[in-house]
Length: 160
Image (cartoon, rainbow, N blue to C red; front, top):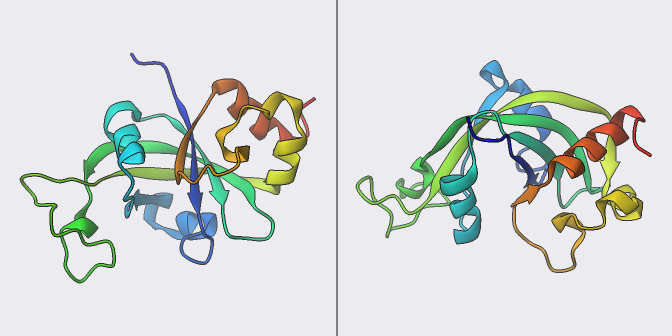
């Protein structure tokens, strides 16, 4: 069995929040609308059922990790790319040649309090996290197990 991997998924809470994920049937949702080739490749090549997800609210006050989820379905064709009525439609994508993919995630744990970007930046154990790099705009980023453990521990007060 492949080793469990970890990811940080960014979402603007006004577009789709952790509370929205929790409100879904079975607390499970399609993670669609990704239109970045590097992120698509992460989905296609690296994400597996059981991988952990840090759910990060971007374009929010505060910028923060607000909970965890896990991958429950591996990459498959993103239906929003195939539907001309969708804002993420891509005329080059087709059922026979889907350019864009999505995965399904399931909510696991809402943090007692958000773990803010400022806290992450100030934590010496998290100095290599991609989310703190200037100019890092990827909506999905790999996270190491050590980074995952540290962020989850910060919610419960176990870090340090």
